[in-house]
Length: 362
Ligand SMILES: Nc1ncnc2c1ncn2[C@@H]1O[C@H](COP(=O)(O)OP(=O)(O)OP(=O)(O)O)[C@@H](O)[C@H]1O
Image 1 (tube, rainbow, N blue to C red):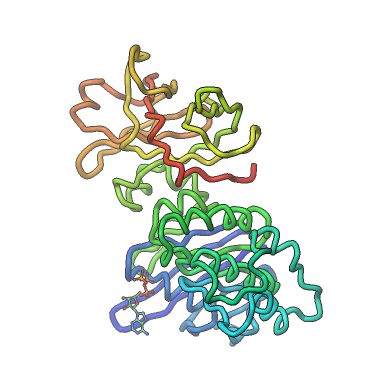
Image 2 (cartoon, rainbow, N blue to C red):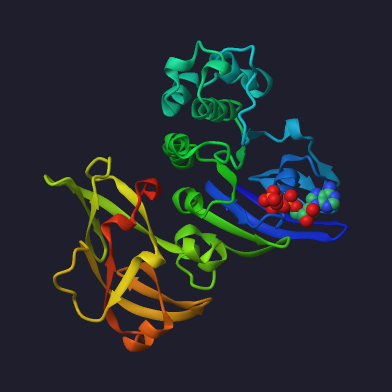
C-alpha cells in the first residue's frame, strides 16, 4: 500500500507544487512554518480541493482533478490523529474506540483486543476521557484511528501538545504502529528528533516544494540535506543490535563497524535499535586515541567534507552505515582530512540520549 501525492494549488502569495510517495511505514512531512505542510494534509484529508493534482492510496483514487474525482473526507478511509485527541467526553474509552468502527467498519469485526493490547490501554476502557492523562488520551486517539479500518493514517503533530515524559510514553506505540500496521502513515512534524526516531521516509518541504525525499537514514546522513533540519540537530542514525547487558550497567551493541557501549538501554538482547548520533557529538582522531574517557571509538573512513555555516560537516563511512561529524574548518585542515583517509570517530557514550533511541523492525 502506497500513498502517492501530486498537487498544485496557488493561494495569493503562495503556491504549493509538491509530489511525493509514502510507502507503508511512517513518512515524516518536515518543513519550516509556512512551507505548506498543513496545505498538503488538508488536500490529502479532502478538506482542500486542489486546483490540479492526483492523490491515491494503493488503487483507490481520492482526488484526481483530470478525471473530476474528489472523494469527500468521510469516504477517504483515513484515520486521523491530531495534536489534541478529540475524544467524546460523554463516552467511555471503550465506546470512543468503537465509535469510528460503527461508521466505517462496514460489517468487519473490530479488532479491539489486539489494538487494546498493542496500545496498552486495557485498564482505561471503562474510564471517560476526563479521567485520562494527555498521553493516555493520545493513545486512545491512536486506537480509535486504527479501529476505523483506515487505508492510511494522517497524524498532524500528534505529540506537539505533550510534555517530554508523555512523548516518551507514546513513542514506542507509534513505532509499533509503524512496523505492524502495514499502512502508510503521513506524519507532520517540526521536530528533527521525532523524525530521526520515527520516520522510515522523510519528505522535506520548502516554500511549497519538495526539496528532498527518501529513506530516513540516507536523508539524515546526506550533508546536503541534513542541515536543512537545523545544523545543531544534524545527525546520522545508526542501526545497532543489542548484544548484552553488562554487569557495570552498560549495554553492549553491535554495529557493522564494531561494538558500541551505552548506558543501560531497556531492550532485550537481539533487539534492533535505531541510534541517533548528533554530528556535534562526534570527534575525529587520526590515530587511535589512548587514555580517554569516551567508550566508543569507531574505525571509519572519510567520505567527503562539506563546508557548513561555521564549520565542516564530515561524512564518515562506518561499515555500510554513515556517521556525520561537525568540526571546525581549522580542525579539518590541521588533521589534513581528505576523502579516503582512515580515521577514528570518537563518540561519547552520553551523546546517545535515551529519548532518541528507538526500536525498529529489522
Ligand atoms: N486559505 C488560504 N488562503 C491564502 N493563503 C493560504 C491559505 N492557506 C494557507 N495559505 C498560505 O500557504 C502557506 C503555507 O501554509 P501551511 O499552513 O500549509 O504551512 P505549514 O507548513 O503547515 O506551516 P505551520 O508549520 O506553521 O503550520 C502560508 O504562506 C499560508 O499563509
